[in-house]
Image (cartoon, rainbow, N blue to C red; front, side, top):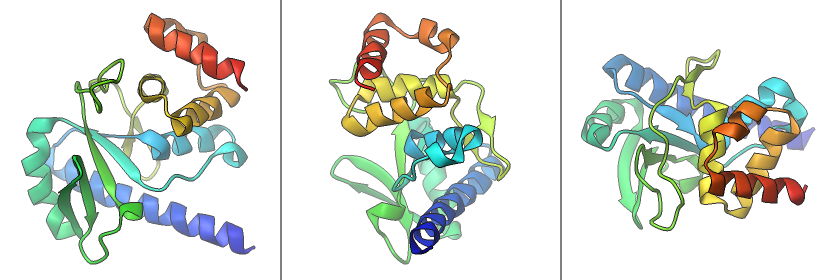
Amino acid sequence: MLVNTIVEGKVGQLWDVAKRLAMTLDATGIPYRVIGGFAIFVHVDRVDPIAARVTRDVDVAIERNDLDRIIKAIEPHGLKYRHTAGIDTLVEAERPRASTAVHLVFVNEKVRPEYVEPVPGFSDPVRTAQGVLIAPVADLVRMKLTSFRLKDRVHVQDMDSVGLITPEIEASLSEPLRARLAEVRATE
């Protein structure tokens, strides 16, 4: 099936970038967590592979003060830093395209001023079989409910549909985020 081949190819590209980044950051002792759609894909895929949606890129939470070290460490591994339109990314050095980029997001900072909460600090990550550290579901739920764009609401629905959003996670949310979760659930 052509569609399966395309999807598998894209997933393979995302894993390749995530593993190169993880290998480099682990070797240099720089803390990170893969977040965003790719982390949600991994969590959902573990529970129900049919429900897992492929994403376009990899988002990584880092500490702002590690940015210079990351830029230096990652260059020998085929990625280079680019800051464009207010977004910090790592792109393939030979084929710099947004669709294969790593978007850098800073912990304890709001991605946009209007967001309800900042990106959560580092909590206990989940290490994938491929060796990549991904944010736990609770952190991903907070981030997706904070940004609350259409694709974020869909990601919340994906996690909820396979039972990843537990009553404990829901109870840990701030009141504004609990209200947003209720709104997402009302539209399912």
